[in-house]
Image (tube, rainbow, N blue to C red; front, side):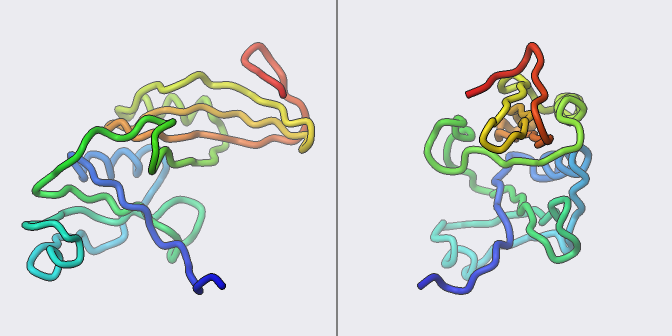
Length: 164
């Protein structure tokens, strides 16, 4: 039997938490959830298992959920370790998805705010649902993959479309 649970947040370890937080605020309308965090000390070393662990950052509310919805917790460790973000087909956290009103407009906003292209913008028709998915993958300024998507009823085919 599953434990009683509620999704709260996803942590993104950033090189520059202020810049990455600003990106998600500018492009997707995320809103800071005070207070800013400045965590360190014996308790934080013990809970993370990282000697000398210290982070600064903040939570930002994800759009579409109200005041008590899930957040991104964007932190910068004072003692970073590890590699660049994983590839979209790698193990572990692969991407975050946002459903948007206009995929092309959101894709341009991502790029204007310091993000970059990852793949092509396409429309894909699902006959079993009689719905078309408009979708593109992009990257935020630190290389994390962001999916931009929108479902529409019926077939919406054009030159950038596919079908299975």
